[in-house]
Length: 102
Image (cartoon, rainbow, N blue to C red; front, side, top):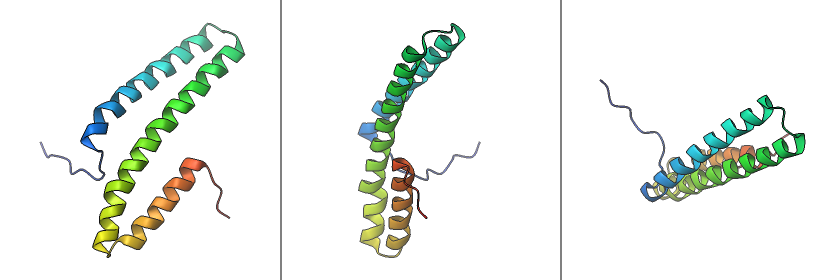
């Protein structure tokens, strides 16, 4: 079996924390699905969805930080890929912040 080449970088100290958070989010999603199936009060469902969004944003911020500290820093130090990585980072931050570029 061919081993996959890693494309990104996740700080080893953060990886287990990220996975734990993602498993928690997965459980939250299943909980919200159950709430919908049971037709629970809409405000309670929205409250849980708000928690899901906040948890997802925290995971995204951690991944973004790792990307900046490793991939972007390395590209800037190297010099060749700096402009490309900065543009890539800008696009990612804009998506993360839901900014609309026109």
